[in-house]
Length: 434
Image (cartoon, rainbow, N blue to C red; front, side, top):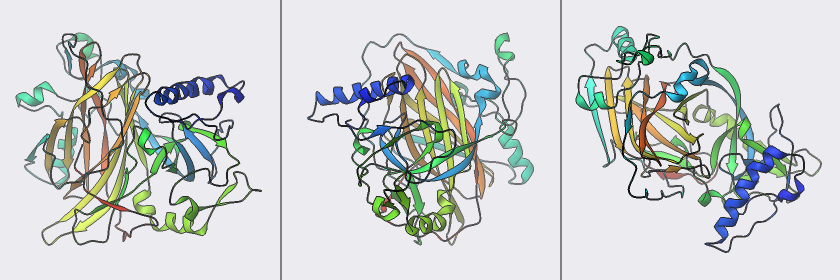
């Protein structure tokens, strides 16, 4: 990748040395196929327990890209593993298959653009059922009900009860001891995240969409979405700070518009009024509030939902959300994402099922060397709130397949604000639920 600091100057930082050594190896391997060279970009700094300041340069701990911090967000993190550790090794539906006779095809790791469509993609199927009543009682009952139905397809890929704390029913006595954790019972813990810019030189080499931050433009059509390339949200623990003597250490079209080089400051990049105005104006659709995590069979799923706004049509009001999902393999065996299965409940009284191959046109492999993959997608409802939950079907390299739970999360609307295209080049995009 050619984006790491000179490791031989990092004495007495063994944990960081280990992680950077992995990235250095990745860069060296890359040289076999190209003329990319490993270059020193700065000096690693000690990690901070407190918040990092605007203008701090960093390396992403998981994806390895160079970035700069714009401003912090405070979010509530709901980690279901902390409330039910057995979930890390328990799945709702598991299928043991014979060892694969052929090696799975390598997934395309290049970050793909968001492609938004009305409806669903050709490789996914969706079914919608209407609830008898769209009142509060029916909505609560639908949220509290198990996702399993009378259909054979749902019997094969059922999910746990997400609204009550009653035990999960099973013919296995050991499974009877497990209980479903109510989303309301999982207490959130406050953590710091950061809005950051990604160095455009690193975008082709990372396994995360670089057009993941989207917004609704001032258009009559409720299907028009725009993306700002090179924006991301990064958890405090994923920040590896470093310093650089370069006056232009990062390549991004918004870097000079948002930050100015001030040698006497620490860090030496100070926010301009443009950044403050941009943050204030676009706060409604940038704001993050909740983060949801859950681990199944050593694969951790993290979901961050964002409310984007409402678009009025003559027939109805359509509410939009985007959600960012990270899959991270914490085990020693590689796994590949094969299928997705979503349940989407709207307070208008509908429960929709979406199934399809892979996500965003890919079936990524999560290996010990490249353990993570991150993408964003969108969902629209004809109601101001709803819920989503589901599973990813994963296949391990030894042939073992299992359903990895996607933690349930709420889709909550906010008072609508007028959205305007932000500073910088925003590209039009189309998407569909993945």
